[in-house]
Image 1 (cartoon, helix red, strand yellow):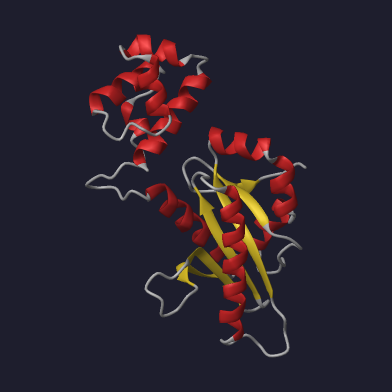
Image 2 (image 1 turned 120 degrees about the horizontal axis):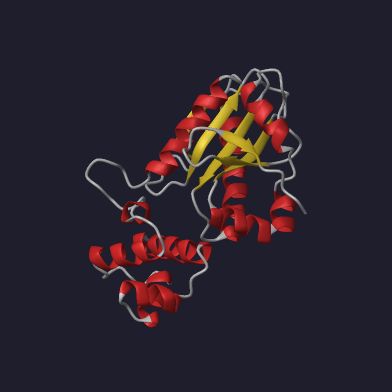
Length: 237
């Protein structure tokens, strides 16, 4: 997984500065074939010196490519955790109770989990929030969101939901603001717009204002690079 992410970072950085794989090869003293293998995620056996050379070839520092690599003092999923934490903090102002890594298959040793489950009992609303640092399988992600929503419906129905009220349960994607994610969502604009029809502006208000109900549709919000704030997505069909 680390090699795949490093390869993706290399390709994005190369394209951003308008270089061909052969240009990177010349600058880093590697063959074009070697550079291609690195970009395709086949560089798990490459040395730090090799990654350092290709990083320098595209004007980056090695630390930028190692953001998700395991380390002694920073967890591998730090970027994911920062966005979970930010969402919990932001939603607290709107009266939402948050449960990170909420298990939807109680009793199962391999339970699926919701990145952040938000519940606001005052308005009988809940949110299945999924954090996306990067997309590997968009279709599978959509199906997983719907399955987790269905599971949460059952769990809440068995709990303390007020009788006689149907409740509102929506899905929310929080997507890291990167060049790759922006390009993917732009390329698949009609698909994402059809899936996430809730107004992102209304979503932001609903998260922070106890009096604002959730919109009539799932939502997608951007998370800034620091992982500390959210902004509207403005999806276009």
